[in-house]
Image (cartoon, rainbow, N blue to C red):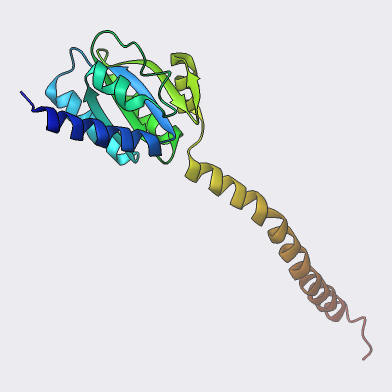
Length: 175
């Protein structure tokens, strides 16, 4: 059993982490195999997040004063939390993928940017394009007009050269 000082350190550490994050997703993990748990942890870590199994009282105390406070209040049963400072879509995608493969893993609720989300809203979040996809689409849209201008500008000398070449072939220039 942990000593009181160790419990306080765990509480302080979790409170500090929760104060920094923008997204917290509350899940249940009961009945998950060790192999599935390892896969879940790796998927969350690859998405730039963290995953912890927490005691309800620890989660509630750590959540006080953070954006996750309404989510972590009055918990009953076994819970785990996944959280990230970066991309909430990537975390939601990773968790949704694991939830499809592991029926015992279920969402309870989430908080994104201070707003509490339902299970359906978390699944909608997971269906959004990732940050990288959005950036690439924006870059394509910004680049498309420049490509059209470059193509049009390149077409002028090419068209002139073709016209001159056809005129020479038709022998329209004096000789």
